[in-house]
Amino acid sequence: MQKLQRVVKNLLFSQHKGGKPKSKSSSVAALDRVNLSLGDVRDVFEPYLAIFLTADRNLNPAQVGIAISITSIAGILAQTPLGAVVDASRDKRKLIAIATLTVAISYMIIVHFPAFWAVIAAQGMIGISAVIVSPAVAAASLGLVGKERLEKRVGRNEALNHTGNVVAAIVAGILGQFVGRAWIFYFFVILCILTIVSVFQIRKKDIDNTQARGDDGENKERASMKDLLSDAYGGLRLRTLIIFASSVILFYLANAALLPLVSQELTGGKQNAPSLYVSAAVVVAQLIMIPVAAWAGTTANKWGRKPLILIAFGAVLIRALLYTLSRNPWFLVSVQVLDGIASGIFTVLVVVVVADLTQGTGRFNLAQGAINTMIGIGAALSNLGSGFLVKAAGYHIGFMTLAGIAAVGLSWFWLAMPETKKS
Image (tube, rainbow, N blue to C red; front, side, top):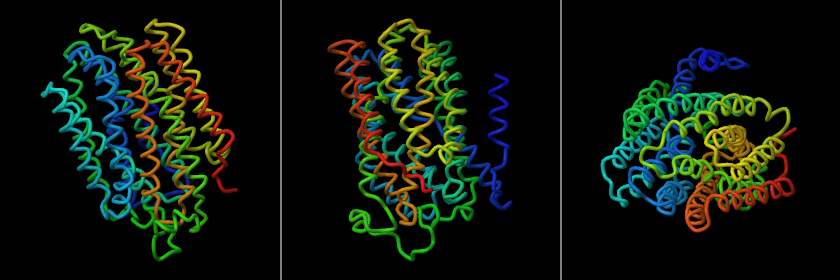
């Protein structure tokens, strides 16, 4: 715990190399606090939702898979147009605040309205809100620090986010175990409120909106959609972007369902099943993500982007295979170390690679929205398909199938994807 406290202190109070204007220091610190309290819906909330729906609402794995996948499906439908909205927005803070408030309301709906349709509706609202928050935070980061320091800033964002997730998972586990699972949702509502307070402590004038959409300032107008699709603007490589998008789908198709499935296997659908097991699984992964995300943000410039993403694919493959070896709760929890490695790398590198491919176009958020659509497609298919597969054939077949998808993704990325880091 003392080590974790030192990490948090260093993340909150350390200065970025290369310097930054003093006038922006308070806004950068506020951005730190936003990332610290901004709960990760997929990595922290969904495992608790899975056990809540299984144990408290008595839903089967197929129904749970449908409920969880709705978040991703809603994101798929909304992601790309909302990415364009983020590009056009003159106040990223308001977008983050509105989306976060919507998530808080959705949590309350899930707790207080037991009907399945209410859960579906709330999950749809969360999905739409989540696809606003992610690109808006990335855009605010780009607008604050610029492209040259984006890798380190994204690594810092993710490290802070995972640090907050560790604390959230510990508190949620204690609440679920000793007070009641509904209090987990109330706790996440409090985190949403803290995020809203922090986001308005970022000064609007400190965010360069031209810079925040990926415009290098040399072009008076943003690239048109025709320019982007014709691969003729600012060195944008459409073929590389398509290869990367397909790789993103395969990564999340293999990875997204693993933690919800493990959560269901840990609890066995029992009403009195210990929530602390699930919290332990989340905490182990998030603790690993803290240093890995910070390391990935720094190492991406030294090693390049491709080697790090290959490591992430390999970690997903090994993790899925290990889950087939034992149903011992502490073994399943320990395997979550690999989740920390894979997700810690991938969440950082997705933003970095998109920034590489859109530099100078003014369409960073639109392209990021398109890539996040691929994330949504992969996650939706992963949760939906694995839910029905596990119900029909069991957890062993489910994990083996996800491992096979990870192997395909690893091979495809290795053979087809070029390095995007400019020499």
